[in-house]
Length: 497
Image (cartoon, rainbow, N blue to C red; front, side, top):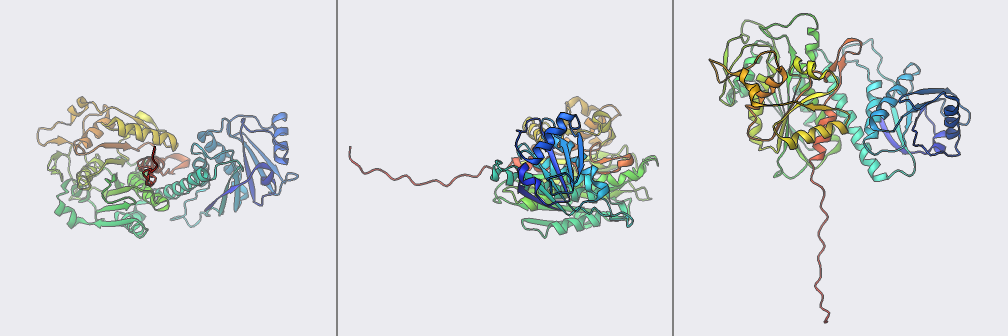
């Protein structure tokens, strides 16, 4: 899908050639004498188009308009959130006619409206085809995002570039999140990372079982030993700033299928455990977006990836394993495996001397109980890091919510046989999981995003969402240092008083 940015006011939009023209109508719009403005005015007066967000009015071959299909849609107060709702509704209304080229006219680009519109088009037109030959891929090839002539060109171009990069990153994350486990093994994910490593500014290294053993990643290796699929540890490095600039490290949980191991999950819904690598997919998607934008920052991506399977060599409840940090872990439940692979990756992250480390994981069902499927769970002992991530989520319409990390929550992780147990009781399960990870992330500012409720949807809309690529990208761009203007030499005056 090719996105373009054009300058079109309502007068120019009327003669613009496109299969379908979508006009976002805001209560703030100023009246003009154009054909489209007159049509909008009449629709409002008749009550066919009110100010309710995403209210639609479709018109076939309207007089004076070149496009054969016109969709007027109310964008309410014009906020990015309502823009997303409006564009989603408008594009969905056109699915039956399968346009190859659509044009979306917005009032302005500021406050992430372009990202909201572009992502809405991409999400609504997405069709999964990788393992479904009967599915017909979307025929939408060209999308024009149009702004009025008084829009600030430089700012609009920046927002548009960000929109395109986010769409590309989310698309990659969704695609690999949706693929079944036999088509998205640890080896497959390593292949995706290697392809990213061919892009400018990105370097990829993939470690296997022997390298993991040499590193002393006993916790990660223990989870993988029940599967015939070999583990992989993916290290991605994006270098856009001076090498002396400390990187932000993203750590993505990559359990490509989770049976629960010996602590076997119930059969119902177990197919959705292919989504247990969505944290890894979000890191891959973020690097795809970075390759498009090329920002002046440094980012490292760490992805421990393996399966959690119950064969004769699998990890058993009661086993004690030794992590890369040297801390021993009593495994009380083999279905709490995500934290066991993440803890070694968090220890490995120390070698990069990071400015901050963020891990992303479909970690706990308890987080779904707490926050549902709207917000990701956010945990961090750093107010500055937590506030920045929260703000990034709000801006990107990829929201999160901060939960506590009081030390008392760690009481349940005490063990008689190891330094720490891998689970506590049922109460506050998402918090105790975060407390476990915190033990391995004390050398740098750290945050944990639990995306168990936001990474995918169930039911008729079953599929990966691509979250939290938008949040991560917005946060990372906010860490870039502002460009400094070159200093101009000041000549000393030789004039006499």
